[in-house]
Length: 288
Image (cartoon, rainbow, N blue to C red; front, side, top):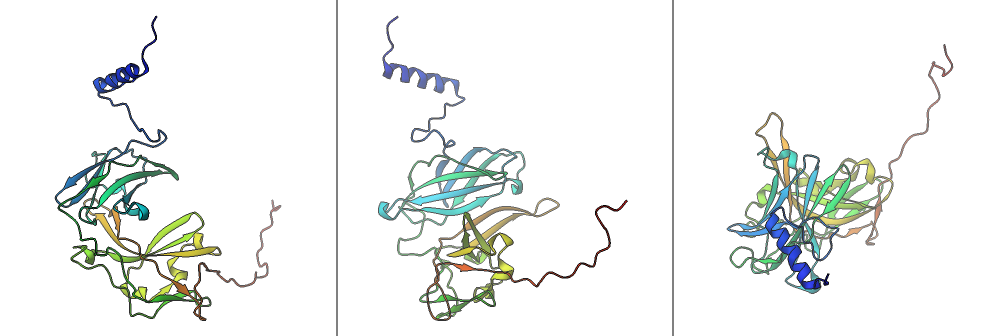
């Protein structure tokens, strides 16, 4: 039997995939990733569409990269979706609409699925550009503190704004529903990176870390990555309110300084406890 030409063999396999319509998953750059999402241009921005979502999925992260300036391109965390809060049960295809974009900038997206602690991401989407929708390149999607910073008080475990009155949110001409966003501080402790919402706008001026951060952030080195605007969408159609999605603005860095005006790269929230008391119990392990 004659050997089949390699190019011809590839074409035959491709034809089989197309005719089957079940779809051979052609992830050309890295086959370890899941199938990439589809990005569609719509009147309000980009619609990121994906395939079937298992009921085992806890949440879905949406990531974006602005390729307008390739030298400064970085992965941006823009949203989290919660399938259990989907108001249309039975519709297991997920989607997200990204409106916070710059006009004519080139973007691509990928998605990560998280289930019981296991995290699996997709391939990058195709690069898309929207010629009609978006802010001008001079606009900002981030909060601003001008020349201000946070002063850290180790004893009270608080952050207090210095050198400025308060944060300035993005303009409504840039994010039309900015009034639905609340400020959130993004902290990192080892592999943990989490955004913590400041529900009361006044808490941006004085942040009590003892009540804001969970136990997993205590007694370890913590970095403040910055501040974002955080918008929650909740599904109230059922008997209980379910979180449906979270959208984040661009992140703005904030410096932390001590009382001597030294910039701190990390801080540590060390909870203090009293001494052990004296045993006042009755029961013994070997009692009948």
